[in-house]
Every structure is written in C-alpha cells, then in structure tokens.
Length: 496
Image 1: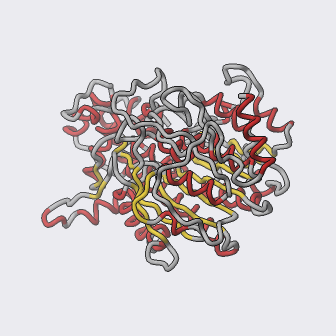
Image 2: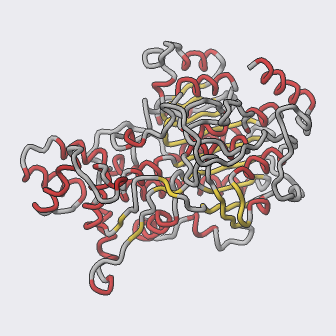
Image 3: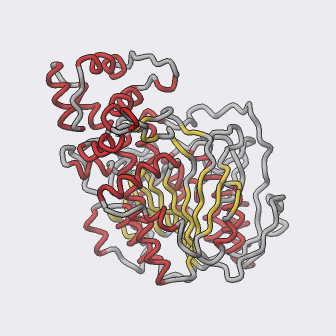
C-alpha cells in the first residue's frame, strides 16, 4: 500500500505522462488511435447495468405508451454527432462476465476473473482509473440506484479480492477521497453493521463531506463540499414499487435527481469524471421481472436527459452511454393468432404495481387459494388460473424443477407465469455473452466507434487525462478457480 501511495503521489507531482515506464505498467498492444483534437474536460459515463437489446426495445414500447415519446437513448442514435460502437465485455475467465469484472475492465484496463474488483488472478492489486485521474487533478463521482459499494461503481475506484467485500470497498472510497458518492448501502458505513464497528459515516463527516440521507437533503446539497449520500440501508427500491403505491418502501431520490445534484457540485471543478449507474435494471432482469426492469430503464433514460442538458451547456463534456453486460435477454413475444394479442398483452404492464420480490413476499403468506389469486390480481392485474397457481407453488416453496436448470428459480417461474399476462419472456435468470452497445457524444467520442474491447474504455479515459499508464495485461483463461465467496449473490435480488 505504501508503494502504491508513493507512485500516485509521484504521478500527481510530475503531471501528465508521469507514469510512463513505471514498473507496474506496460504499453497496451491495442490498435493505435489518434488522441482527441480537443480532449474532454468532463466525462460522464452512464451504465444501464444488465441492459440487453430486448429490454431496450420493451422500454421503448413502454415509453411510447406512457410518455408518448421514444427513449432518449434511441433518439440519440439518429442525431448528428452521436458515435455508435459495439463492445466485447468478456472477463478473463469466461465469455460471460459479471459486473465486477466488466466494470474493472473499464476501471483498470485489464480483464480479470469474475467476482473480483481490480485484482488480477495472481493477486496483483491494479491501479484504478479513479486513483490515476485523482492524482492528475480530476474530481470523481459515483451515483447509483444500488448500494454505492456494489460491483459497477466499485470497479472505477476500488481493489478487492471479492466483489462482496463491501465494508472494505466503502473504506477505500474514504481513503481515496472520491468527491461525490450517492446511492444506497448505508449499512456499510455504520458502526452497528460494519464488521470492524468503524463509524465510517462519521469519518466522512469529519473529513468535510456533506452527509445526506433523505431526498429533501438534495435541495440544500452544498456545491463547495464533497458529498456522501446514503439513502437506504441496501439497494434503492424499485421504481415500480415506489410508483405502484401498494408497497411500503423507503422514500428515495430518483437517479435523475441524484445525477443533477452531482453535476451541480462537480461543474465548479476544472476537470471531472462521473459514473452514473441504473443498477436495478440488471436486478429486475435477474428476477425475470419485466415491469421492474422496464421502469428502471425509464428512470435511467431520465438520467440521460439530465446529462444531455448538462452537455448542451458545457460542450467540453464527453458523454458515454453503455452497459456492462446483458441479463436474461427478455423480449416481447408474438402472442395469439397472427400475433394479434401482443400489443394488448404488453399494455397489461400498466396494471403491474409491484416488483416480483414484493409480490412473492405476499404470495408466500396467502392462506387460501382465493387469497393467493386476489393478491396476484391486486398486484399485477393478472387473474391466475388454478392450474397455473398449482404449477407455480412448488417453485415458490423452493421445490420446483425446470428442464433448463437456471430456470428452476422461484423468480424464473414467476416470470413465466406473468409472461402469460404481458407477453414478455426471458431466456434465463443469468448474464449473457452479448456484445453491448456504446453511444457517445462530445469531444473524443470518435474513439468509441466500431467494435471495441471493454479495456479500451480505460485506455481512452487515461489518455484524455494526459496520463500515460497501463496496468499489465493477463492471458485469457478458461479454467480459473474463483475465490470462495466472490460470486455474485443473485439470490439477494429476489428479496429486494
């Protein structure tokens, strides 16, 4: 750790290109690219976690239905100045990445094993994007609808053996003085729930951070202090549960509202980078919960609007919009003769008022078949048949068995039942190997066109900052044994 600090201090003292020739660096063998004629002074990196093309299509249908306009995401694709790319997001040990390996490829320029955060298969702690840019004078922010310590935000700033080392990740945010942090995960900053009993929230406060815990705090958020916003103990609640009005969930700020506050704080800085994550798109897809995932996509689209407004006022801003991987590959299916029922079934999404986790909790305590059916109808507008209820029941009791093993989960069975109502089906509850889209606008955006590797995001960002640094690359492998406890805890998403 001491040598790491000394290296970053020397980088800060020496200025641009100070890292060239460092013992832990090596020049990338990536295809050469020209530096931006006028590199950006501000970078906005937006991530709709788990977003595949199917959920984009469904969210666009829903936007047309409810907002009477298409997604801003799709409107951008036809606008002059928007560059289009496709990105390979595989990890070191698998064609299918998890969020921590994918975000770490952006955050260190190295493909690492699934389950780790900016740490190589040999245990080497990689130098992160936020450490490098911080040492070069850039301010940094992380905004998310998940726990702020979750895999995607952590991938820009932290180094841990396991993505689940949330206490350690939170402490590293403090050590590295990330200037803006907003999302959930309060429990990882509180002495009563941290394993080491450290009052990390108190440490942030003593270090001059404005600590915010209520949506109303955003209105008075200071512009001359760093910010720590922790609005729930765990992840922020699903938008469908907030808007549905029948779930008792925390009152939290929207992703767009947090993004605007972060931008209002960071705009005063000469140079900054901000990651904004719509993290619960992924969790909705893991749960085969079309209504939840689609509404999270709409909330993410509103955050894009906030960033575009900022970019119009500050044209030296680079905007990059992408995802770390696809999840579950949902799609609206052809339903009925000549697919004539697809449109009406899709409209049934309007009657869904609860996420799958909230609905499942209620169904498990329904005392009679009639109470079960009434709960299902009140929450989703779906009048379930006796036969389908009987088929679903063993899955809710953790005793169901599907022909495709990954569909044996209770959430997968619930997703299939609700597909009879909405027409939207999923291929699995897991991530998939899709190449993912990248949209970019602003200075330097031409560097993200075409077919790129996930590691090239890191390379572009450090080059824009004038920092000539690369972590050592690793050989792709197929038989790496993951660290115990490093796997993504998908089961937690089914309960919140």
